Length: 77
Image (cartoon, rainbow, N blue to C red; front, side, top):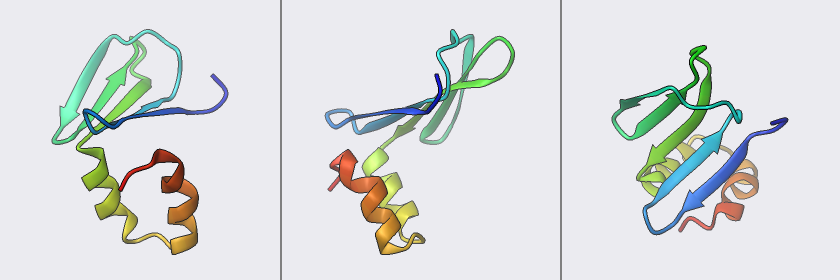
């Protein structure tokens, strides 16, 4: 996979970011963040739970132009 793949599940409010197509061996969770790893300990998938809240809080530090380019395609209100 050459670039990251994103998917937002509006119903469950989960943002998923794939870093590779490798099989997942295990996952670790810290609060609302779950990282899935391969057998080689490489990150494969990141899940952000309560994504809308997370993105709103973290986006406060970003310039407006950057926020628009990143978040408008996700349709998070």
